[in-house]
Length: 329
Image 1: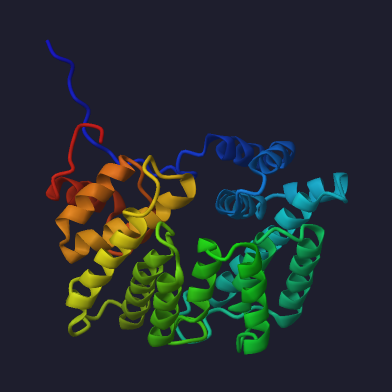
Image 2: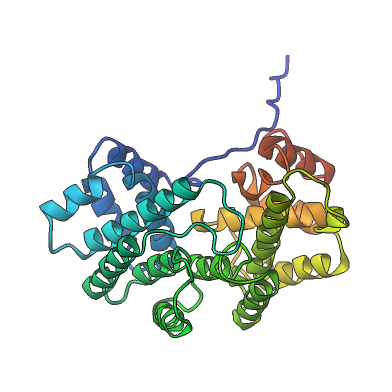
């Protein structure tokens, strides 16, 4: 009797297959920082991978004292300073969101200015400790939107310029700026889209930055859905399907996917690939969606699928609908 074929199920791995990172996160949960230290040393100056790993390490470290323990044990460690600053930023962000609840209005969730200023100083010290590292500047751009009235255009530009000097096409840094310019925080839908399209247009072939336009579309969808509070919004059913949305998915496909080196996605690409796949599916672009599902295999991220329904159900249903279905992908 032939072996029974297992049904397809998406894999919502929080580290997107990055097993060394998974080991470091496990150790941070139990208070051990040495694995994270070794991981960051081995990562070196691979900025996209380093930024991805630091971001996830910081989110886990924010719930423990591991970052402080590392800093105390090795006060001269630049990596400890960078992780400590990123961890402090995550705590400030979580505290601000918890204090204001589910805020949807302009300005988002502001944090206490004294707390923010202290976190800014920590990030600047981390930048001094490791001058080539873009991560402290990514952390500063995250903090920027938590100020009640934002930061001055001059200061925002300086932080943005410092990031670009180190990693001109930093995906995470651009995402933080996009959120700053969004209607939920200190801008408008138009400002956000202008920023995303400008960054996408300036990016080299093969850069993931063009997907910022699809991320902006997700941000707009979330904002309008939150403001409607369950009420129907006229014309909103076409948010993903109108001509411009389709054109922009195709443009991202050509500039990023057809320009990137062949091979499986890096861990830091998986979330953005899911965003483009989601947009292609909802726009009805079967050819692009089929190829993207083939590239992803079972690697799924809950965002943005969770904003439009059950993530696993949508990922599986759309995958089958575009003809990318197989037993295990």
